[in-house]
Length: 301
Image 1: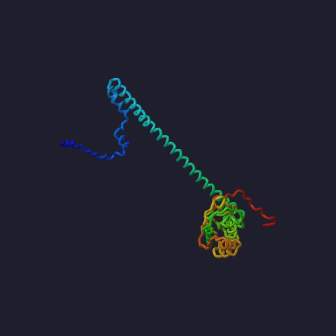
Image 2: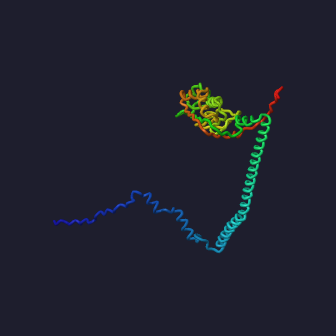
Image 3: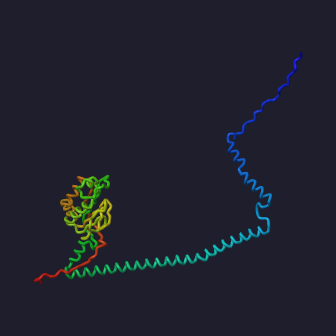
């Protein structure tokens, strides 16, 4: 029995290469179908009905033209109104500038009148004082801070201790919170200035601010105030007088000894040096409120 030949199986399995984006099927679907099917159907329906794109009927074209004309008229009218209003706004702005300039000129004139009247009042005061006390008026003006001063004196610079910080204490020097700060306080400045006056100073200023008979040295928190004006350290104290003698007398005075204790105990820094020529401006806020002539004594010629 001859064997039957079996048909040869020539089918071979062909393996197709996998797509590189096979693992990104969702992203591929989105990219291939970027337009939603509903939008695509609506677009096809409008194309079939002839309603897509620009209007084709005469009525629709006229309506579109009318809308464009109306929009152009609105834009043109707005531009015309802006052009008409521009000169009006410019005119009002210029009028406002002119009013400000006139007000400034008027204020400058008033300031000039005030300065002239102030000089006239000062001259009359000097004349009246000369009639009663001779040259005592000049001395009174010098000691009260009403006039500029120039002459020899001393320069005293006082500063807080290095690394000092504001503490919670605001009372006298004896309190613990106060002493731990190493900061100069209003009471310290008062004693230092009084020591200069006692040592023969004729005029004194602190950080350029002239002291008068009415000046007050106070505190607001950690700041030192002179006539309600805050001072910032370092404090530069200028005193007009006999420079060498004034410095020596101050160091030996109670105020100088007090400053020495502040240096030794609290680290407050200071330097004192004589100056050949000092210039102290007059106090701007000084005003004479009342003045009474001295009555001659009985029996005096």
